[in-house]
Length: 81
Image 1 (cartoon, rainbow, N blue to C red):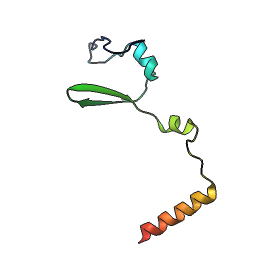
Image 2 (image 1 turned 60 degrees about the vertical axis):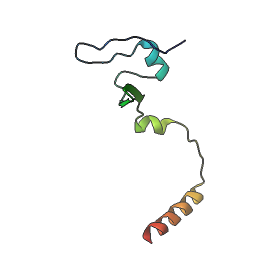
Image 3 (image 1 turned 120 degrees about the vertical axis):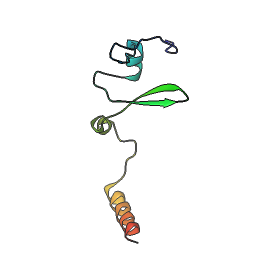
Image 4 (image 1 turned 180 degrees about the horizontal axis):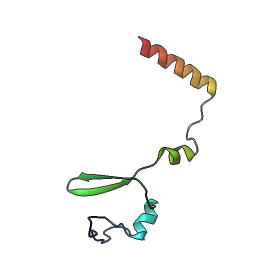
């Protein structure tokens, strides 16, 4: 499905209503936090993730507790300098 150049309208209170196809493609749900940015006279809408949704995702990197403990120790030593 081509999701480029889909027309929409601004609501009576200034709301922006992305069409269903766009909401589904981006995984936007009711109450979903988003970030609005203006860049080169264009409105960019980005989905924001909550801490809870990030923590529910599987870890991308695995680290042994002993390795993490050593890293934390060395980082603390650097900060004390």
